[in-house]
Image (cartoon, rainbow, N blue to C red; front, side, top):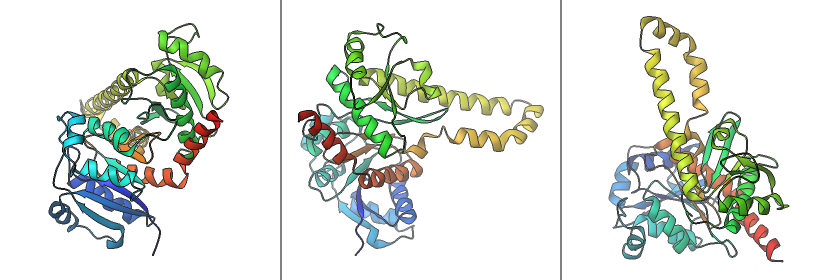
Length: 337
């Protein structure tokens, strides 16, 4: 029997559940025979969705869950009270080693709480950050943290930088990734108290390639590979990034359809424009990993569809094959020694 990388998928979470999570899971296993997906949710619903696809049955397992955590529910209360929900059951199996990783488009709050409380932190990790990949003019950058730790301390940001560097080098293949801290100016003396205190710690950290401050306007141009900040700043950067991107694409499309001349021009530039815009499609990069846990948790957008779910599952495979958790443990152990 083949040894699979087992990825737990929350079938009940997200705006397009259960259809898109199931579709993404089936697409992943049909493209890669190293993966086994474990689908968590109401069994009869999952079987009904699976009935429309061709796939290797040995690569699919179903875990029946009778409860569902809704997006609007208080996260801590939901995790405590809904023990038979897809989120709780899946995370408990990751914690127990029954699954290697977990993907969900469900409640961000419940996934963040569950990641820390149920899966648990690697010993020595102070705060697990949420770290999405963002498309840039030169490739992608990792934004760390974007939502897990609003009140971070300097020591947390240093660990974010180290974990982010490990992820970018070994998952994304970026050698000696450049690390920058989000600031309101390029000068070292700029910034709030957190940035001013963290800057010299990053500057004197031998484990990373620190390049200094990065202003928000420089992020889309790929100035740094790892963008370090606390979660409030990171979430604002991410949401602004997504909003501006969606607005620009809409304006381009509307402009091209505004007259006969523009429509003719659109036909001429369509192939080149389609290729250019594809690199800014967030779906192809998967979800945001929560780094520093005893197992991988990947949170996708609530509106995630098939491709984002599929690519998030592929993220989990690379994460496992590159032994990212082991590398993070080694990094923490070196500090303690």
